[in-house]
Image (cartoon, rainbow, N blue to C red):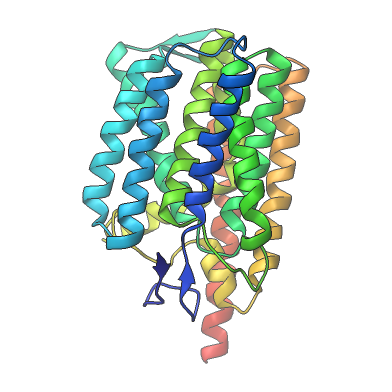
Length: 320
């Protein structure tokens, strides 16, 4: 499996994309070891069904890496897998407000929960373009989620997060840096997005604390802000949501001859800030309403917008 350069690529040579197979193998092997040698670990009874969903997502990624499935077809499959996962975990039925919870109709909660998983899977897949970017950032975010799960005693969330952490850690030495040897490909990025987004919902279910809904989005806020502002820009210009493109901030930075390593490190620094903030809020039991989270997303998206605009203005001035 390999990624051949095309009009949207930021690489000039063919890159192997089989790293995701290693992520699948590491996840499966870790869970088998835990089930065999530590059977007393109180894992969720729904875990086997979650793993079936993960296998479907992984298989979709393998097929896409080999045959390049059309975006709309891939999104339909992801959508149905997301629905299945949400029905198993149970949809979010209320949101934390400033002073009290905001109750949601079942259908609204189902749609919102499905969209969270859908956006994470597709968004993290979009961000797997620069050497080490997706793997390093998601290793940090998943490590933070695992620490939070450990603090709160959410065992299944912690185990899923821990296995994903070690899987990404095994990929990083071969993926990070300007001379990357292999990419996670759709196989790895789709699976990473699914495991992370599902684990964030499981954290809420295991702790029975809807106030923790902010944890998942806040941990990956640098990614989410880039994804949302890029998609809004494409819709405004009449572009397709499903078609491949090179409009993300990291792609614009690399186009300005900033190295893959520096770009990945910049996202990592932003990730460290938001991971630290999230863990601090959990430890101090600081209640974050969805309004504050939305404001944070808008602010982060605004920073991304102005950085991208500055890059475009510099590019135009050089052309003149």
